Length: 319
Image 1 (cartoon, rainbow, N blue to C red):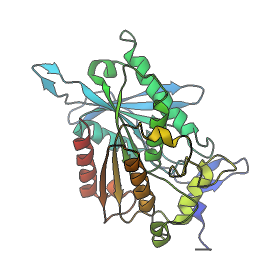
Image 2 (tube, one colour; image 1 turned 30 degrees about the vertical axis):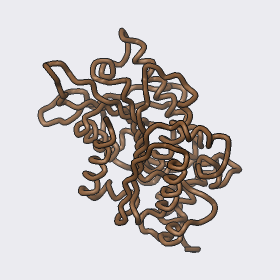
Image 3 (cartoon, rainbow, N blue to C red; image 1 turned 180 degrees about the vertical axis):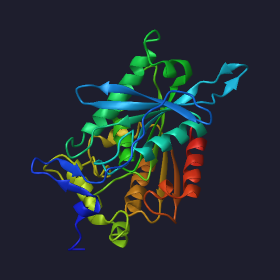
């Protein structure tokens, strides 16, 4: 492991000013709000904060469920992509297609957040962007004349869910804690969906040691993700990485809404996800846990059967 170069593995290079050069140019897709034959969802981009250069991509299914000739209101799912804090965005082809499919299959209005990336923007910038998104949704709900039409015409502001994969799951948890101090009416966050959420800590877990040389997500790469994302001068026992540490925020955990937690046994972080699950349960949070002994981190991105299983878990959870 001593010869392993995590920067090379992640296809990034650190610049003298502390920024990253991302060497892997991933394909992107534009939003399209023109309904074409065979298209399962339409999408459009909206600026969130010009100063922060944050934006969102909104997805709406082309086939809208109806009841007695009136359109049924759809849940609003705020989605936070993975990428280890340092990669991807809402226009990444994989993220776009995933949200397209999710919008059609649930069905739901999906708001995919193009949050700021580390290390150019370290934590808690990503949590700030998540809260900005929820406040933006509230603003639309309170402005029936000029608000976002897809939300006003088709969305159910009383059924809002936060959904995140990998580090996106971490964002969901921390953003939800912040919402407890906000009045978001008429927006109501009904549940949290955390798919293989990314948590860390200084003391190694058994799964981290067992899968330290994981082909996709080796331990040095996970460590580098945290090194690039956490506030300078902190370590992996900072509560952003390790919510199992004690602190005043732990009281807030008791007030969290319903949670769906998804994990796979071959994920180096699975022990931390299990510890996180235990913490939620001990604090009285209603949790649905869906753990599979077989599978690795991100398996649902490449295995269609696992993707269907995860989608069904989410369908069952959203009410």
